[in-house]
Structures are given as structure tokens and as C-alpha cells.
Length: 370
Image 1: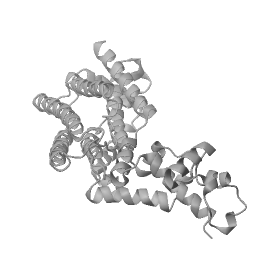
Image 2: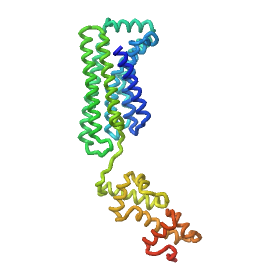
Image 3: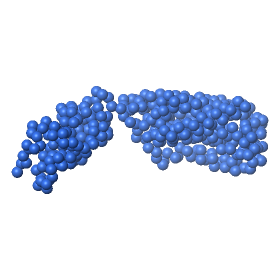
């Protein structure tokens, strides 16, 4: 009864986690896909054991065999998940499917077993539960390969994490690199414990020469623990499980060097070529979105490079554009206020105030240059 309850709770927890990840959404879709796939595998594994502990065994005993060989998926999935969490340039490539060939081969080998009828499966399960199932040589080899494969991928993942710690330690992300590395290190320990339990169970099986259902239940006990651990981390920091690579900007950031010149040229392009200032709804936040900077940084950029406030900077462009259009023959029929609206001013009073401040004259005193 205890094992059955544990299986049911862990399955429900896993389904809840997957639903929560999808509902929340994520800009890091690869990380979400990898972590959800690992959760699905854990759910399927626990479902197989839940079936043989309940009356469901009489209806769908074949479900017990579906998780066979799925341990071969944990290694590559975790390795790619680690990359998707740390490396902003990581993209899925078709060649990566090669890593999943061992599982596909195992699935192909298991097809005759999975396609067996209900009578066979009921007999197989009863023998397994009684602890009388004999371990064949091929199964011993498969178990050894599974353990070695997971160990190999964990080593690769650890090396990748250590390399990222050295190369990306100064990257200023909202979810810091150190937080990502800590999370991946903790998850590595979880899978290392999982591997240790599986290897220990494998040794016991070799000694006894028969399947022991309790050792297999330990397998699901660890996967359930990993599910609960992921849920715990998701509650503490919802963004950590599938973090994006949005950068944070420091208040003391100086616009010097290549970065400063890049933002300055982009600002000038928006004003001179796009003429974003003609938008009467232009606000600091909108300009900031176009530049890809926080609002306070745009204000700082304008102040440092031009010695002006945002409003004065924009109004200078509007007034200059107003004067240019006033001197164009095709605009002779327009009223002064009509042109003012076209260049971005949204009221007569704001236009008059800005014009007087910038030119020293009122719009009505301004004389068109012949």
C-alpha cells in the first residue's frame, strides 16, 4: 500500500509540474522541453510500477514494459539540458539525435516483448513480484551499458558546467550564471545518487541471479525524489528551471567603447532615419524598448552624450523638423499648429513652450527663410 501511494503521488506531482511549466511559458523553450521530457520518463516509470501494484494489471499489464530501457534517455537529456540552461548560443541540431540511438536500439530489441499478449505479461509480472524472475546474460549486459552510459554523460555534464563557470562567470543575466551552475550541480548530485542506487541494485541482481522487486522500487523511489526536488526548486525560483538569457544592466554602466558607440549610433538612427520623435506618444519607455535598454539607462545615455534631458532632446528634433517643413513650399498651406502635430507635438501649449525655449522666439514671430 505504501509503494502504491508513493507511485500515485509522484505521478500526480510530475503531471502537475509539467502543466505548471507549460502554463507559465518560457523564453527558453529548449530547457523546458528537456526538463519536461525527463519528468515524462519518470512518470512513465512510476506508472509501470503503479500498474502492477493495482487492479490495472488485469487490464493493461503491458504498461509495465514501456519504461524498459528508458534509463538510456536520462544521460543525453540531462547533458543537453545543462547546455540549454547555461549557453545562450545553444541550438538543437539534427545530428544530436545520434545520442538517442542506444535507446532506439533497445526499444527495437524490446518490441517482441512489448507486443506479447496479456497472458504472457500477467505471468511475467507474477513471476517478477514473486522474486523468481531469472536474469539472462543479455539483460546483465544491457544493465551494465545503461549504468556506464549515464555515468559517461554525467561526467560530460560536469565538465561542461565547470567550463561554463570559467568562461561565463561575468555574464550579467537576470538569472545569474552562478545560480544556474548551482542548480545544475544540485541536479547532477540527484542523478549521481540515482546512478549509485541503480548500480547497487545491479550488483544485488548479479549476486542473486534473480529480479528483486524491492530493488526496482528503489529505482522509482529516487525518481520520485528528483520530481519532488524539482518541484521544490520551482516554488523557490520559478525562473530557474528554464531560465532565459535576458541581461540585467547596472546603474553605473558607462557608455564608453564599442558598447557606448553602438547604442549611440542606434539612437541617432532612430531619430534621424526612423524619425521616431514624430510619434506624439513617444515616451522614454518606448525609446528604451527600441534600443533594448532599461529606461534609466537611456536617460543616462542622452544625458552623458548630449547633456540634455529626454524631453529636451526629443523636442529639439521636433522643432528642427518643424522648421524644415515650414521652409518647404508644399507645406505653405498648412497651419503652424497643423505642422506641429505632424512633427510629434500633441498640444499647442507644449509646442509653443518648446519652440520658445529652443529658438528664443514664438512660432508666430518665426519668419520663413526665403
